[in-house]
Image (cartoon, rainbow, N blue to C red; front, side, top):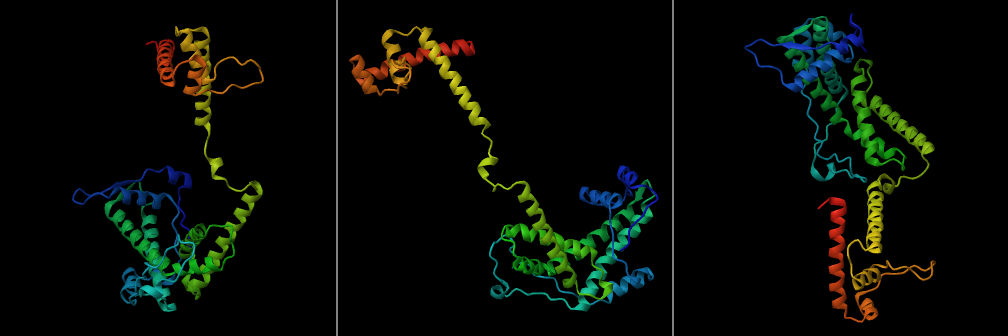
Length: 333
């Protein structure tokens, strides 16, 4: 693998402000392309080298692209990784499966790495410049997008490898969708690091990379379980701060109400005070160990000798007086 080196230090490269100068007659780069350009120029970008790349430019491109056979694009409509139990929908939907031959695979990886090689060549040209020529910038973006297209094609063609490895893995404690996600990331890393010049099939290399990713996932989960042996409880993730504050507020309001009624700051009549005390259990208990319960309208009516409807009227009038006192004390109304 070719590692790109620069005269400037990595820290200097990160701090470098990339300025793209475009000719007035040409349109400016989009924001997305500018971000890609800056990431490529200041970050890490590699390719797998091949002797074909170092031929004369037109000859190499003609050999790699023009003279190469057409490779069909994969159909991934059958791929549903979020399902816990997957069925082979390709048998039911007449989906065209793409199985690459060794020759087709070699062509596809050469095209992919040549695009990345061209990105690195352009990067070498502009690495020491303060400003980038518009033509070079657009050429770099063109090869970058082309490399991404080939990368996606290779990954989509080999998606079935991830599902096959995930089904073979005995990791019941790991969610299947999480396992597939780890496998997909390992597949993309394998695409970037696979050297087709060694003569091996990509599936051989990718399967090993995917299984290693699954193994790392299992190790991480095992360490997590050792640190946190308690099973995950969603209820523990919910904060009870609001409930506690609301309970404290209600307790303060009850204490204030008791104080208003006991000191008769709301100018309640004797019958109004008695109704409120019985209705809300505020009267003083005879036995300190006894907890008095609120009485119903009918029970209070029997105690004071009136109907329950009359008790309701007295209660509402008393509550109006108490509410008015609370507003005066706390809201200054």
